[in-house]
Length: 441
Length: 174
Image (spheres, rainbow over the protein chains, first blue to last red):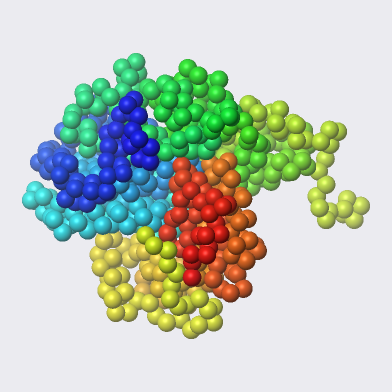
């Protein structure tokens, strides 16, 4: 992509091709670029055939979980029930800002993708749930929807197909947890955004208790390119070394890096070249100390671990982390990792929906301990306690927010333990709670 | 998008509640209700309308929303308190949210917060300035991490704010 930096020749701009191109935001501009022709074709195609093309392409969910999109779509059968499509635009993972750019620059790309996906799952209604903080993206997508209705692209007889396709924009109100699919459904229904216990899975009983598919903004945006150019074309964009991760991925890069921004590359791109050649490496005169490759909830990597890694689902996993949402956070050697990990834990403590005690108590307790260590008031025992709490937080709650807090803490402690220990005063074995006197107790 | 004040009225906690859902707003709500199979699903959008018109979500406002959507005020309050973007108290005319989550923090966001507190004379996070113009808070991830430090002033996002640019930014607000 070329925005906000000039495009690098090694990028593969598919979804991001028109970022920075203001004309592409309008209906006329989008149509001039071939927009809505794929929707026209899709509406004339049997949903099962649409599902099969996407299945063949190997496209996987870009929101973080990486579930095969075509397979997810194929869970929806023509059973006579009302089906819903929900597009997850509640991008709130620290380090991730790719969906924001899709919605800001190419809102029609999203609307077209949503309409195609709705058709593929036998749904007449799609809701695009966008986080409340994204005022400009919300405005752009709403404008695009309005234009599409006025042009007869959406509505009771979408593009003259005789089929109804409605797309509505729903604005969130500030809750990271609503990016979790079942919490998102609760929020959309006018409830607190508490995740639901699964089963039932959304494909069985989701939004308004009806069969529902939830796709990320980037996923449906990619799906239309798959349908336009074919499954083989999509597979040709990525490294042939790993057929499990196909096509392109939009990575957000931020933190201590020379050229932060969004970069779209073929899956399997070497991480070292990505960080140095495309993103310009660390700021001048500094060295990378740590990289979080997939949004803040995945294990932290050292620069050495990134050396031979490739950027796809399996490649980053082999390096010891996860692809997640594709938000790459860089830390240079000026950073105090204890301070930054404590700040990250505070984010999760703030955003816990408080439904599960392991998460509600665990994220807050973890934060308190980390901030104590940060302030030079920790003990060596605290380090063991952090690991114990993390163990109790992982895999024991309704959703994975609790795990998301524990993961960077555990990996940070493992890889930067010396920084934690350096902040702990020698011979300190207990913590004095201000205002508490053991004698008075 | 231009920076503008949050709402023309309703910043006084003691102002009697003037109904929101009348005339054009009522028609807007009625149209909105056609998009969902349940009335309750219009709760978040209705609360947004209330906040846009009155500047905050007051108890009287919540009661009105509850009445138009056939919900109880207690239920509405329960939902409102879950989300961070609804103001349950009046805020300054310029509501400033500075992102200090890790990706921005490594780029110096904490210093930007201090600069805002100094320039707006708020002194403390969450406290409205004596002249009623500003309220500054820290916010958890504005989703613009590549443009650190992003700052949201009412409904406008300002990217790449530095300590040096805060003074001019504040001076440019009425």
